[in-house]
Amino acid sequence: MQEKTGQQEEVYIGIDLDDEWTQISYFGPGMKEPETVSMIAGGEQYRIPTALYRPGGYGSWHLKGSGQKQEEPGIRYVEGLWGKSLRKEVVTVPQECEAQELFVVFLRKLIRLVPGLMDVDQIQAVTFHLREMSREAVQLLKHAAWRIGIEKNRVFIQDDAESFCHFAMNQGTELMQHDVALFVCEAQELSCYYLTKERKKIPARVDISFYNLGTLPTEDGERDAVFARKVQEVFQGKIVSSVYLVGAGLEGGWMQESIQILCRGRRAFQGKNLYTKGACYGSMIQRTKKRIPYVYFSDHKLSSNIFIQVHNGERKFFYDLAEAGSSCYEVEKSCQVLLDGDESVDIWMQAPDSGKARIESLVLTGLPKRPPKATRLMIELLASERREIRIRITDVGFGPWYPSSGKVWEYCIDE
Image (cartoon, rainbow, N blue to C red; front, side):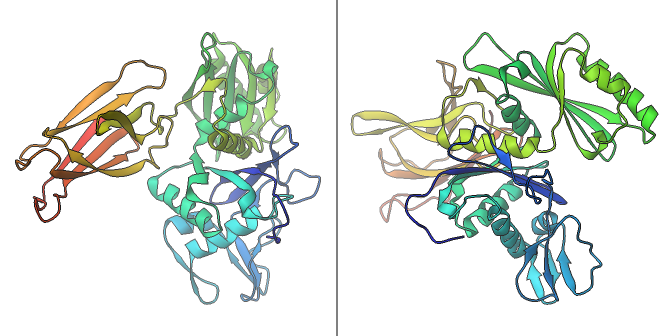
């Protein structure tokens, strides 16, 4: 990065991260929509190998160009950096090096490709799009971003459906008048994300259905016929405004019959950088917290606000444990409270658009008898991938007067 000079312009970043390829998009002042970085100026070479190389095996690391070959003499390559990092592998280049350390180098060099970026402090948010999400992946990405100077609270993670949602819902009005479909084909496996929205409410509720459509044949003519039939099955009885195609399996000039069906009363596009732009839109939404005309709760995000009621003197208020829309892979909160005579803890859960809250009363069986406000509890909350809320309550006592009993209560609540 270059030296800071005066006030820096704000930048929002979206990264489509895969083990083989990575794409990066950005949005800044004066831009109407996110733009994707191309490795060729003025071109559309958006795919950047998730790899590093260095000549002779020593010196500085460089991003690998898509045209470079693994067998080039005098060059040391490390490919598949994302998968190697998740597996905590150690690579030899020629000395031993942790893959996670190399991934930090890769991320730093990737960020430097953003035009006009002078310093990481300009980055208001960076959102990673992942095809497979896990708590380990989220923690790794947040730590890697922190290593290059981006605070963890500015790092967000999205899956296919959410990136598709943010991309589709930020296109022109004519492209989203009705339903929107995304067909994905990698290694011949065909699937579809189908977006519908409730138009009677503001913000509109967005729902996305997933269809596993099986395998496409390898022969062009047969592939065309099978894909055309699959499209008709998905669109049966529906009104679709726009269609997006993603994946190497839907590229090439083999579409004849299927393209006629795709474009019948609707517009179709090759979504070469759909996920990375969708992630960039996600950064803008997450960080600015601006009011948007739609709401989407993915399978891995909480649909309710979770809190406890506490008081300070005569004043009662609610203390937030988790916010609706937070990723289950990121929710991790703890706090300490003094128990005011009760032998239970009430957990409140409320959907943002509801005036009623659901209360789960967690009984602390076997809690030692003590005076009011003489029992200090540690409350820890963790959300699982299935949107289950795990709560762990520990009796930590009250100084030397009332030592901890060592009791721990664990509960699981369906969100």
